[in-house]
Length: 192
Image 1: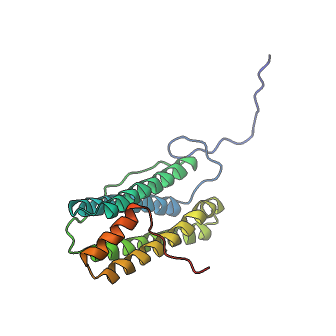
Image 2: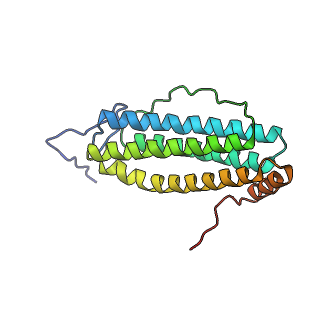
Image 3: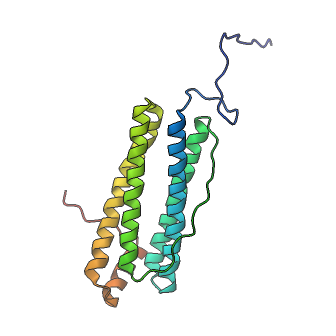
């Protein structure tokens, strides 16, 4: 058996870590992707702090819901890391801040959660705009399902904010919501 080699007139493009890459990435896009990865890690830490807060108050459904949200945000961060690696980039893990742990009410936590989801959506939209500006179609394709999922998350958190507000912090109502969350019921009703 003979082994043949292909002789090419150009050299293989490689990223900062020496990994082969098909298309270089603009520095501004890489930086924005890195920042978003950090944002997802920060959201994971915040949701874990929420899970602890609710667990300390014997609201296991809320606690489990936020523990799952924490895991989901960590998975999102991992997806961004995988994407950067696939594109030949080096993943830089930046420091994240200790999350706030003192809250006055479940309503305050739910509102903070909704605002955090809104900020993540804004970050994804800015990433998308950056990718379009530098004509990086690979990145827009990567971001498409993430933007759609983020809109769904915002809708679910808006629903939960409304439910918790409506309960007016009454124990019986909060226990009903807690039980619904324990059973995985956190999606708003559909009219269609």
